Amino acid sequence: MLDTIRKIGAAFRLPGEATACDTITNGNINATCRVTYRNPDGSTKQYIFQRVNTAVFSDPVKIMQNIDRVTSYIREKYPEEPTLHFHHTADGKNYVFSDENAFWRVMNCVDAVTFDTCDDLSVIEATGKAFGHFQNQLADFDGSQLYETIPDFHNTKKRLDTLFSHAEQDPCGRVAEVQEELGFIATVREEAGALSVRYASGEFPVRVTHNDTKSNNVLFDRETRRPIVVIDLDTVMPGMAMYDFADAVRFIANTAAEDEPDLSRVSFDTEKFRAFCRGFLGEVGSRLTQPELDSLVQASFSITVELASRFLDDYITGDKYFKVNYPAHNLVRTRCQLALAKDILAKRAELEQIVREAK
Image 1 (spheres, one colour):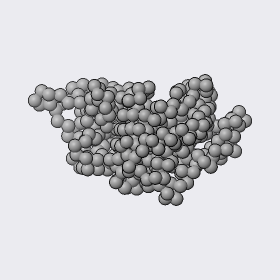
Image 2 (cartoon, one colour):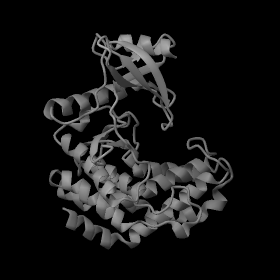
Image 3 (cartoon, helix red, strand yellow):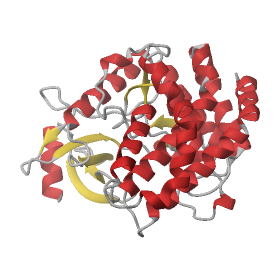
Image 4 (cartoon, one colour):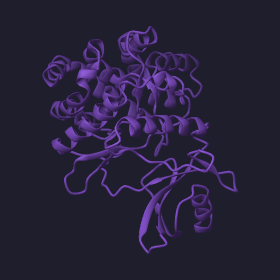
């Protein structure tokens, strides 16, 4: 492995010699390692090497072009602020193919800490601040310049249309047991898909969206717990700002895991929502249009129904997309997300008041 790493490092013109390579195991898609280089003066520097999973990301060049445009823009407009730094080859590319035709990239290593889950409201507010700041940095960037690397990723209407199409086909004979879930989704189908329809009609600006706004995609200072930078930009593409907000609170404010079978434990924590909302809107609230601000709670409901529909669609079609640990895993996930969506509806007035106060 170290021989391959040295060849990749040479292509990126890294100074010194690679002396150690430690595998990082907390990612589920790409292969990642922390590599230590010893410089000619005896000092050391660490880099993050990633082999991109091209089975998941079928066009990694477009992903890296999106990343390059976004990080270059932030670096030029906000030179004093930290941003991810991907190294480039002599011909200006931020990626290389190895001798085995694997796709590699290298970035500077930031000494920081991440949180997979968190109940600390100050950290949740800081997470909101980080993603809001990311939106604020790119508020003037034309999102249409980016490739849509995963077409219709958050097109809720299309996701729901696909679900009901597959339910009619019933390829695995499972539809009879999910009538209650399909029935609820059918009753909210129009409302859940409304924002996607309005976005397609041009009612909302085309923003640069992160599309994976979980707390573990923010690097925090080890001592102060202040956010340093947003990471994992593989899914950066054009989209709705509200859905970045919504996907974050869907995950952060759920009182249970995404696959909690005991639905009595599933609810939407308004205090966590308030903390994230305060951080997010404190950074980017003045940049968002009034229709965007007015749609934050609806987006939180819509994206929760969307994820439920994706789990249910996968269950109906034979568990081909999401990794499952037991036969009904996707159905359990579906029911958990639908319980969360119902609680968001029940608390809608309270959540909308929290948004108004946070602005």
